[in-house]
Image (cartoon, rainbow, N blue to C red; front, top):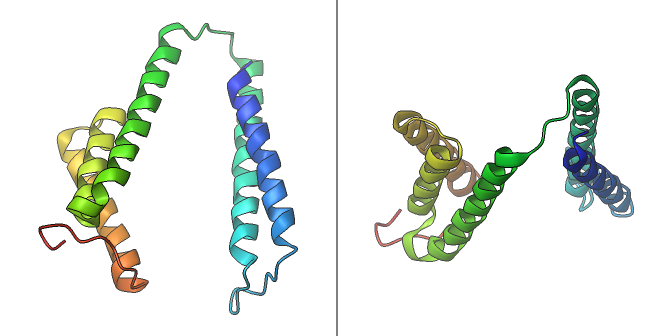
Length: 153
């Protein structure tokens, strides 16, 4: 049985339900006139649905698949998780110095290349696309002030 998937999905399922129920205490409003509780309500519902899907998937997999010891797979997953956390900490530290667009491009490229094990071309394309979309959404569409680096980006 995929014990870790079951436990984590149940935790997130309960957390999603708590978030959704707590958001109902706030003014939810409507999509045309959103209140302060609309975003937490949507977040809680989505979290619950995704966690429920993971729970069902892990139950089905555990019933149909033979038990495999984690061995090297667990160690590899652990190393990638630690690497991702370290990379995201570097992102948080360097974003003020180098700017949003520059750091986002670099970090996404590194994540796609090392953690995602994609080719250099796919990593670069994915990083440019994701960083470009994030820049357009936050800077252009929502007019959010983003950190500007020494290159003016």
